[in-house]
Amino acid sequence: MSLRLFNTLTKRKEPFEPMTPGVVRMFVCGPTVYDFSHIGHAKTYTHFDFVARFLKNRGYDVTYVQNITDVDDKIIKRAAELGVAPRELSAQFEARYLEDMAALHNASVDTYERAHDHIDDIVAQVQALIDRGHAYRLDDGWYFDLSTFPDYGKLSGRTHVEAEDSVARIDEHAGKRNPGDFALWKARKPGEPYWDTPLGPGRPGWHIEDTAITEAVFGPQYDLHGGAVDLIFPHHEAEIAQQEAASGKVPLVRHWLHAGLLRVDGAKMAKSAGNFLTIRQALELADFRTLRYAFLSQHYRSSMEFNDVTLAHARAARRRVENFARLVDVRVAESPAALELVERTRERFYAHLEDDLDTPGAVAVLFEYIREQNRTGESPGPAALALLREVDGLFDAFDLEQPAGEDAYVEAELARRRELRAAWQFAEADKIRDDLRDRGIAIEDTADGTRWWYQNG
Image 1 (tube, rainbow, N blue to C red):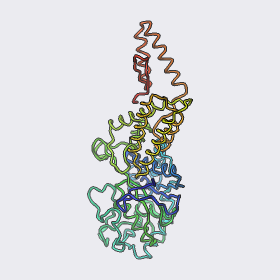
Image 2 (image 1 turned 90 degrees about the vertical axis):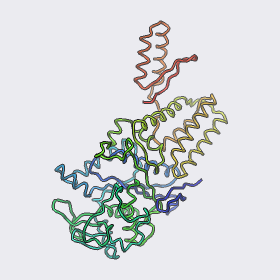
Image 3 (image 1 turned 45 degrees about the vertical axis):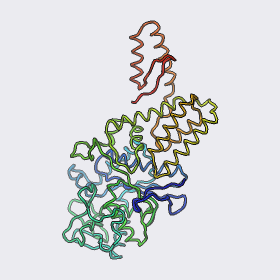
Image 4 (image 1 turned 45 degrees about the horizontal axis):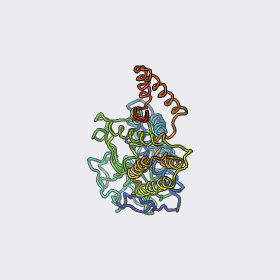
């Protein structure tokens, strides 16, 4: 089965066919660095980290680029509130963002491209739009003229901003030719950063930063563009208009992928609602593996509810896999049936992922394998471990390696507990049970002896 992805542009699943066979140029809209990144960012960027990992797993040569918006109205406003320079503020929160991505093990990005490093590219693209008759000048800068681009709306199916659009940034000016026209280059204002250019002193609009960066890095066309679903309109629509109008080449991108949004306790996350959660705060509630599992166990296009129940389910699921991994005995010579079960599981696992990255289906296959293997009564061996490691190479959500000496320590403590119980020293024996529980280890006394496993912690 070949990889098929849902393309937002065509509204259907399509075979993934990069422009150069075997080579993928992938761009994902990065953050505007004016504050700490939130848990919604974590979901989006973990999903696209998975996309890059999976493409590499399938043998593609992937170049994954993400932009950093470090020149923007929001940065300027926040910097003024804090009494610092905009460049200082953006550098500070860019560093925090990169720390957050490292903490989440989102390590697939090859290069981060900052807007302020591409001012010449931005000016060149705006000038191309002017030369081709797609831009006009007002007293506060240069605007894109939507009336010159009939294809505007082909990604989202609409052309007007609506109340529920969470990321709009359509610049207002009474002199605009069309209500949806957006700023390409903003004229200098007192107290704001600016560059002296042939367009006049000023700074870039938000939308133009991304297309100037991708044209500089990939050229006027490339393979895959990702981002959260709230960027489809107007941001990604504006990207298409800018680049296709400037270059005359269609399409800008072959495959558009959009990740669903995250809700906290049933509501859209917002500081005003009091449910805003930064990545750092989330990592205090759960470790990176639990967060990654929580995100990746949901389909990337689905919206997701984030709450204590979500985290509890993710922990429990993780522990099921990790406890199974503890049963692996690499000395076992697995039976032909066990080897066949591993291979059948691998095929079904990848079949789900090749069907629009169906991670929930792939996870279900993994748990079905664990159930079937446990029912055989055989100890899982090297093939089982290889399968688990292959899965974790994509998900990075399971701790398959226990600390050195951990098993020996637990077994020694259980032996001491048995001795204490045999001597009727139950209080001391119960203390060992409680101490193990505090280490995240559950025990159960059965007719066949004492079982132990890592509990949902």
